[in-house]
Amino acid sequence: MDSELQIALIGAGLGLVVLIVGYNKWQERKHRNKAEKVFTNEHRDVLLEPRGSAPVDERAGRREPGIGNGAGADEDGEAVQAPRPVREASIMRSAPEAPALLDPRTDCVIRLEAIEALDVRLLWQAQAEQLADMAKPVRWFGFNDAENVWFPLGPDSAGACHWFCVGLQLVDRRGSIGEADFMRFSGGVQRVADMVMALPPGVPARSEALSVATELDRFCADVDVQIGVNVVAVEHPFDGREIEKLARRHDLALAADGSFHAIADDGSTLFTLVNLEDGQFIDEGMTTKGFTLVIDVPCVRNGVAAFDRMIEIAGDFARLCKGVVVDDNRAPIGPEAAEVIRSQIRQFQGRMAENGMPAGGPLARRLFAL
Image (tube, rainbow, N blue to C red):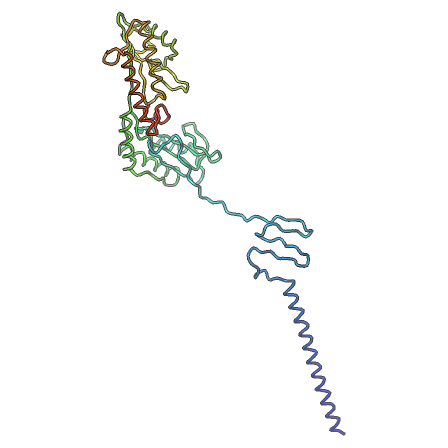
């Protein structure tokens, strides 16, 4: 009896253990499935998302706003523009081209850059100390960042610039620069940069600059021609008041230099009428044995037309004042001689045009300024 009871109790205990183990397995499997469903379908690991992608709400069927993926939507379904990526502004500035009034063929050009916008008055004062009394013209320019243009600097200039440009003219009618001129210019610009705390300038090579100056001076000497036509008295000296009256009739204006000028439409001088002797036409009661009409060939746009007008005026003066038109050797200038002169003018001005320096242009007027 006791043994049967014990066997029954043992069997019931084993059945209970099996039941408990089975129940635990069932609960474990149920929770595992639930957890997998939650983590798989509802919560994405943003650390595992590809860069630039945005989370997607699968239940609502819309894309949530994210960084760098364009437009998104808010909670009400309204489109929302994603913020644009912000880029830091570059502190590097590209160097502007040199001013049009400077030419590497005729000028030694140096640029200066200031990290912070520099008051142009400070630079002008500094350059006045370092580059005063240079043998050749020196021109300064400042760059207007707002308008993207260069403007010439002078003692009355105002404003502030990041970029400056300076040019030393290599040649004028007195000749070309020498090594001493170059060293004084380049060294002076370097000292200006130091004084205003600008970046070190890039200075052209000395040998190259001097070589360009030498070649340019040789070319300018070959085409630097002035042609004069004289009107000399035959019977008695010319009266200065009569000369002035005739000059005004031909639209010649008396200038401060005491000579008469024929003025072109652009304000430049076509030719001048000067006294053949000492004295100026502004002198009271002056008389003279003659006067000269002079054309500066490199500085006149249409030299032949200017020469023709000059010959016409000389002939009119000679008829009215009882004089004669002659060359520097006192030989009369007739039609054949006039045509030879026209041919020479065409030749010289043609060479200038071929070399990119047209007669009467801004570049020629600088190089041949008196």
